[in-house]
Length: 152
Image 1 (cartoon, one colour):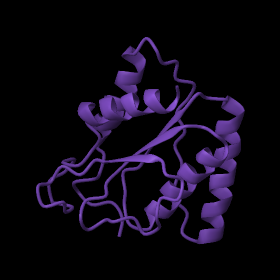
Image 2 (image 1 turned 180 degrees about the horizontal axis):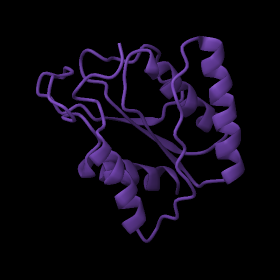
Image 3 (image 1 turned 90 degrees about the vertical axis):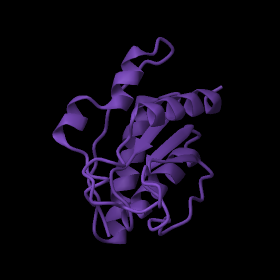
């Protein structure tokens, strides 16, 4: 499992990321950073990376966080671990990831964080359409609105 054509973010997406554009336009938000982290293969490395990310985010002292992932399957372990870590640090968080019907999380979301499914295919499946299930402006608006509600 992992990235398929519909969940793969292209270079154009990275240069015109709808989430970053929206955060930059919103007068209520003051983004403090963007962290890009890889996905580890083994569970011990996953835990180590999440602990480091949690320490980093904690040092930034944000009012909230949005965690997005352009993958699925075993990557949901990392995704859910960081949401749980943020929850344990009392940092409100909203997650954005592909779930669909075939990518039900490998691990349950024990943090009770809000997670927005970015699947766009009618059947809830990963497709062969490049970039079909990327974060779009509507997903970004939902995430920001949810984060604002959680941060109050």
